[in-house]
Image (cartoon, rainbow, N blue to C red):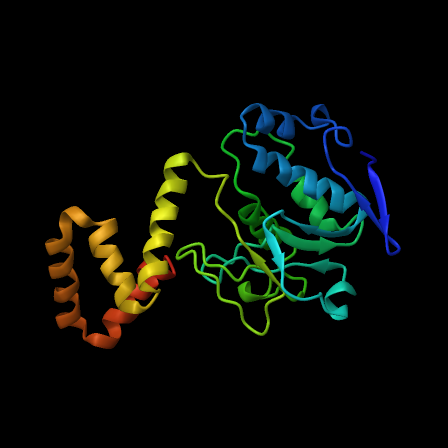
Length: 242
């Protein structure tokens, strides 16, 4: 199959190992040998965008509607994966050729593959450390992701352009199994407040149901309804301990 394709004036490149030499990057080679193919793809997508520019889409990205001209007429098109972590959406993003942010993220991968972070986390960290002072619009999670990692539920809004139907293939088999079980629960019972707490007490901490219930009730009586809800919302949803 040819590496280049032309369609309606646009040029498409088939990125495979005939096009990209895995020996050119120790990161990619180590990831491939470890059968962590999603991590190998992390580098290759960055390499392609940095050297050619354009928009990258994961295979599990569903396009709901065309991108706006304002999105395309920018040097960097990035979205937030989750409002709780602020990690960046690495399954749908775009940049001009040679963009300094993409270069910095590529440079992160000039290290041993072992114990490396997932790309959304890397992108967020690189931006905070090097580009935080530069004003830039990052699109909210419902724009490019529209799926919750915690509940697995897809919520399309009027702002949604793509849906990322991720399956967490970069995780271990045990973590993927746990995620599927969790998503099945929320698909059946919804993601409301009481559904969340029932899940925490019966699934996450099933062996200590009574003790957890009494612990929450004690906090409820001491702090009152409003403070209790705020406390546990920060602790379990926002993942904060303040």
